[in-house]
Length: 255
Image (tube, rainbow, N blue to C red; front, side, top):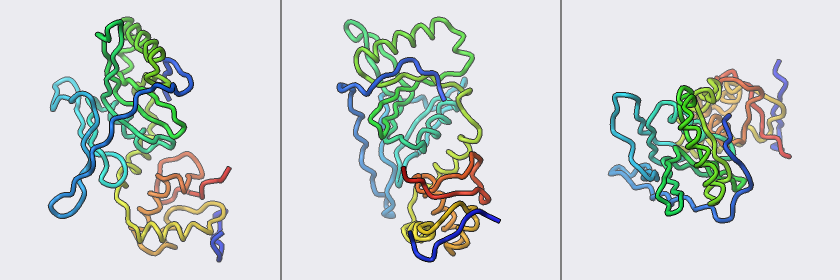
């Protein structure tokens, strides 16, 4: 028996430095507007990176993806590890804006530069700069010394609140699986989304996704609508697990 009911009436990472959001942190570049296709469907907005990723490489994979809500935004990544972290951050709670390949200039005449693989602006106002590298490259004293210098200049210039170094060790298989599921749900379905919200409005306790989908009555559309509520945070997993039809979910608990 599931500990739930429906009312009849609706009722990871290595941190290089950190601190409060600096008042002089540079603003993120504006996202180009989505453009309509010939059939009227909106195309993804243009990417916001400060440098292009090579079209192909013999030494590592390159990724071109569309992430975000609705039409989405184009993103580029120059390794599978980097793409997995982009994917995870694109659906992470608290991330308001995500940009990849961000240029940071520093030095006496700003002659030195470093490209952060991604920068996340949080709902709290914090701005977190990420560099992604394989674990094997952390053995290099030169690279770690370079990152220490970059982190110090980021703090001095107020470019970001934190600098974090991410590797494959920071990728949790459960989080990555769920990120892949949630990232695929960009398109809204107003009818199904409204029905899903109405269904969970009286939810007390937790029910499995397949049971809620049955109550909604729209088959696969209802299931996808529930997943969108998970992505938005209106629903929560009752326990940490890979999202599946049998996953128990409950409404977000109000503080």
